[in-house]
Image (tube, rainbow, N blue to C red; front, side):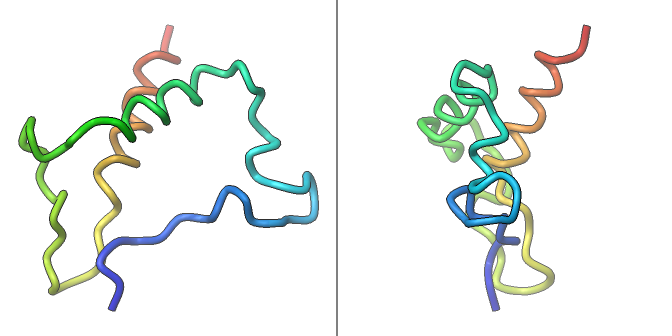
Length: 77
């Protein structure tokens, strides 16, 4: 059993466009958020679920949820 819910591979080939990464401009802020959160150690501030339990349904990775939260916060006007 997997320990996290797996997302789509961004280098995965699809029908249109060729890669999922091609949907996002090179200068889009989401790329900065992606790199920023990937560099964080989420255990230090006490994020729950960084070490997933072996029982139950696999969780979504906390880093992915944080990226969505930050993007939503920055996108709301």
